[in-house]
Amino acid sequence: MALHKAQKALILKAYFSKSITKQEMETLLIHGIAIHPTEWVYSNEVERRSQARKREMIQKVFGSGLIREIEWVRTP
Image (cartoon, rainbow, N blue to C red; front, side, top):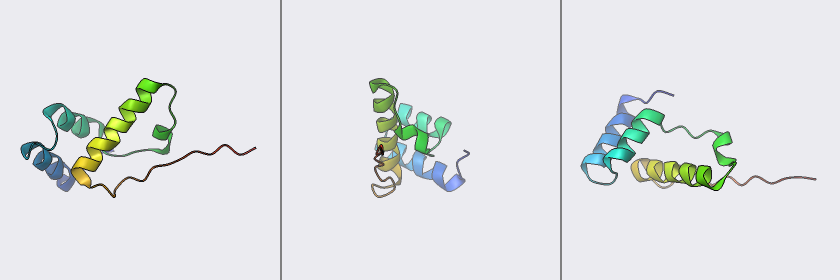
């Protein structure tokens, strides 16, 4: 999903204010800020940490109330 100019501006502003690193900025600009439901289902611990880190970066830039935790519940 492409980022809007305003979203790109917020990412750059966070980088210049030292809220995020250059690598984090590049990650957000390349991979975007969309979080799909499938990103809450992990096949291993490395993937879980990677997705958690992405959500943390997005929250740093766009605010803490943007992302709500999703809990998957298996029904019988």
